[in-house]
Amino acid sequence: MDDRSEKNIPDNSKYDVISVIDEFDYSTQGKKYNEQFIEWRKRKGNPFSFSFEKHIKESVYVDGRGFILSSATDAERESLARIFYILGSAALMYMVIDNVIGRLLIILLSQLGFDIHASLFSPAVYGGGTEIICVLMAVNLLKYIVPAAYLHFRFRLPPAVERMNSRHDTYGLVGAIGVTLIICSLLNLPSAYSNETKEIYSFFKELNTDVKVWNQTEFVIYAVFDIVIMSTLSEIFFRGAMFAVLRQFGDYFAVIMSTLTAVLLAQDLREVPAVLLMSLVCSVGMLSSGSIFTAVAASIVFRIYQLTLAMIETGSSYDMFLTRNIFMLSALIIGAVMLAAAGLMSRGRDHRILARSETGLAQKERITRSVMVFPYSAVAAICGVISIIKAVL
Image: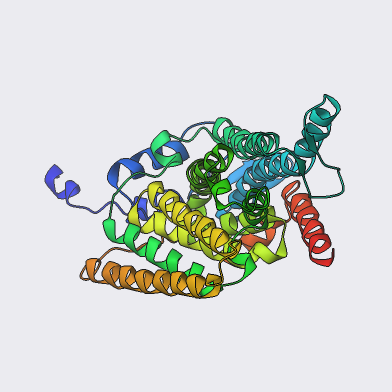
């Protein structure tokens, strides 16, 4: 028999193998990113990988139970439970630092003689500008750094995967900033910027009727911190390890769940529209450009808009309303121009933004099961109660 004839026989055995890792859509990111992402998912002993491979013509026999028919949906349920236990723990850390540890720190400093005062049952903070800014900066740093570090050490993702930097498509960056400006202008509500930000900038303004108060050191430090540092840390938390580990279930799921987590941790119904829309813009912008820098840039633009609008609205000028409207209209026009430019830059490109995962659970069941995992479910319930209390009071 001629051996060459046997070599020409197609090997159909590979078509009998189901592998959720190999069937994932890797066309949306760069080669290096995909290689490291696959390597992480195939790493032996990785409890957070949605990894399932089976030969459909084979079955497993277990003593006392007979033949066991495992499936991709069973594997996905198990990996989702493990992942959302970790995500729920990280969200709980964020919430405790934001609501409890921050208040306890203020009370402790007050007892030690520092000019800063607050209670566990009121969001208001009183005292000197330097003390308030130092405490707020410390609490804000902790509530992002601690849970982000926890996710980093638990998931142990490759650096290039945890902080997406696989491509640098300019149209994604331009489009994300354009949409950000449009969103900021169209919201035109107090929810367009966080209540904490508005309160801090109003606090500086009320220190003195002299407009020169805006040039004081504390204000400048806090403004730079809020715009640059907070934007970077928040995106590392929501679009870093959290987003990366969820991508193995499809980008739609990663966008939905990272956005839902951001909305819950806002803990304020008035901020939901802005948080919801900006989280979607940052997620899609990062995926379309291939870099987490796009998400950080969009967040920075959003916070600059916050600062500018807060300064205009807390001003005492008779032309405040006119100035505000001109500013918002200008931002809207610039945003529309940038979005149109991004559309022209991406014309003719055959590139999908969101990768799909067709294996495993249906999307609705995937989301429902994830939200029900403890302690994620507990955090969601507590954040919901806090949001309602703030809305009522």
